[in-house]
Length: 245
Ligand code: GLP
Image (cartoon, rainbow, N blue to C red; front, top):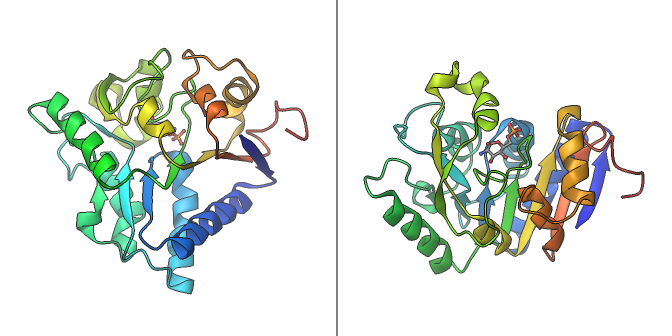
């Protein structure tokens, strides 16, 4: 696990966009895994700007979104699908049919989980997975004590994680209590992972995830076991790490 600390969120976002650009240049038919969230917003804005300035080519790329709420209409602006479309997919030349999302509206959710996992396998897996981390160390909707051996599944979303989305939903009762998420095993099958973390509130969970024991109580600690995982941190999120980590 490589940790890189940036003085500002802006510098972090520039490096993020550079890494995605380099991946696309090396492999135009890249399979990108992507999580939504507040942290991802600024980096995606830089990616869109870079796309416009350097005409990055997403036409051969395929995306797999990490998670989606259960029961939201796809055009609900609070859904992960809608947020990623408005923050990225609607601004780049990726084919709409190449952007894949877990089907949170399926009648048979178990079948939807299986189908999503099969889509990823049929695409020969994810080349680069772009993740954020929840304040309790969750990845996607994999809350603490989710088994490391899970594939795509339906997850209960903790009150803590739901409360973190009040900005998007307006009130807690509107935040769904379940989501479909890539499982920990699904995430770890990605060939390369970039985890983005910003802000002082994440400093403690970053310390536990990077320096603590690998434990299902801190889902993000599993990333210590990944062969090619980079953690991009701003100085606030890295404030509890010893220098030089
Ligand atoms: C949400 C999402 C995760 C995201 C995390 C952090 O629960 N399901 O995919 O990484 O929270 O979000 P933020 O960047 O807003 O802190």
